[in-house]
Image (cartoon, rainbow, N blue to C red; front, side):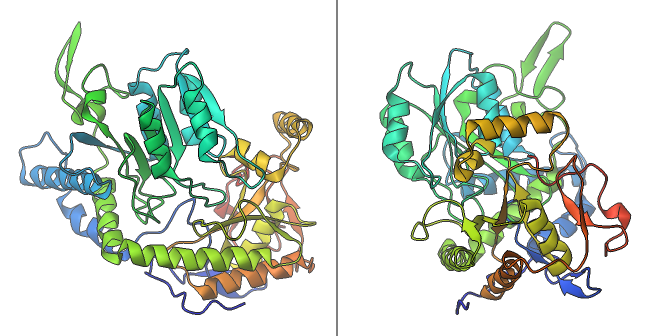
Length: 463
């Protein structure tokens, strides 16, 4: 298989690092796990290294370093607003750890009650599902066997009674890479007086953020800024009244023993010492993505996505999950291999080929259950096993996901390795499965990695 013209769009820190394999050879590491986390742009690392000598507390120091750090932090906030097309608006950008924290933050600040309804979908990552189900009552839009839903399905949920307080929807699936028609859905929700929250964690590194949602959240660690910064953006009025999600220093103007005067947003929402380095890194990643240009990123993604999904789908014994090959997706492909547990496929790719993939349920269990076509009885059986501490037969799949540093050669290398596994070529060593996690690893005598590399009980599969 060849895909001419698909070259890497940019390099990342750590590209080409050599990894020991079970045959005694060292191979360049190939990360096919961009949907989970990405390495840093060199420019992001350089920005962090340049900033660190000037790091200090922000918003509360008179010294030069504090003033410089405050300027860098607020400059990052400006970059976040620009990235989300909100500069000049009355929206606020709240710097947080990641998308999960951002959505939990918003679920608290919307003051939802148990009787309120939030419309969301079964396609969502747990981060855009569990905070809403804890704070309110969720009305779920289901998907078809291909993992997609139509606008009519969302409209029906929006028009059902009682009227929803919010539509919470993903910008892109973390399992299939499918791109729901967000702009259209935002318009349909607004026509019915329903505000919209978009989980843009998967979307942000690949496409311009939609301008229409009332709220949007994303993470730096998925967009080449792995320093712990993320963002939540929403209308200022939502954060002007009431107590914040986190309370403490920095969120207040005055504290007495019996009352508190909260600071104005966004300061009210950022209690404690903020992650200034994460904010600086996030701003640098934004600058780099904008310098690459969205047209170039989009074309690169489209070519990679087609090569990746077509290449894997053409391998006998490999089953690609999600929409058909003619549907636009991000460069994400999730698949199963006949005769091999998903955890063993991932282990063999890692230890034999130095290829890193994700396996398991990808923090989106309801969606994967539908993609795999599992019956309720099967799900109940797996749940019972997990409660007994046995995850050896947990359902799941393997996900390969690519970023701006990937090329056609990387797709070919992955597909060649999967082809060998799908042909059921025997492993060169014995792999041992840990029942408590379900994961496979080489026996102690065969492992090329130190015993301390993997801590006992750390699992790839659950999530």
